[in-house]
Length: 117
Length: 117
Image (cartoon, rainbow over all chains, first blue to last red; front, side, top):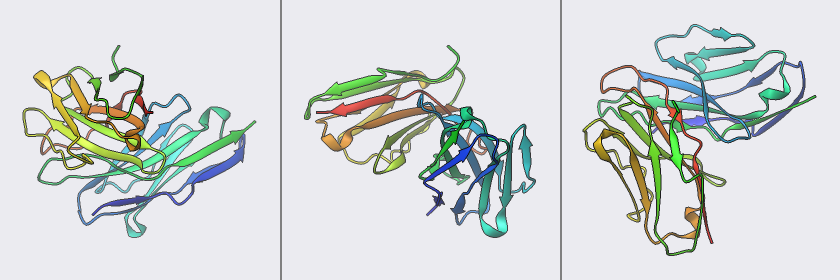
């Protein structure tokens, strides 16, 4: 069975600080996909990034960066120079590319990030 | 609009009543998912539709829950004889996933907040 763990329930930082959100996953598949979603107070889940299990290159997009390490089954997310608008709940998710074709996501419990001005 | 549309946005009903929740996926998206987000359980997968294939119902919590997808587009999630534990936000997502293809990001609607009195 697959599982995603986000051990940090809530993080509070002051604007301009860097913050890293941790994500650890478990899966028996060799082919799988990892995602990060943002859920602002408005409630909609916003897709941020997708990685497949064959691509361990880290990725940077503006102030966001992701560190994927298969050796530790982790897919951590760093926000550099945080801003108040980054305040949201962030979810890490996993899907497995099984023969059944089911691509449902298994979500972590989420990390609530509060960025104080 | 271009996104996933869900209706109603809020639904309050009495215990024991039936409810229907609607989802309009992004045009052209072949895959459609229903999830439930509640305080105690986080984000849980309910059901997955892929094209004309039989749906994956493995996440439905009881036989009071059912869903259909007509014409490969609009989907309706029905909960019969609602219970208070059914109170949650029901989220619909769609994606371009095709069997055997790479996982595509799921795009979520704003959800329906269901409250059972």
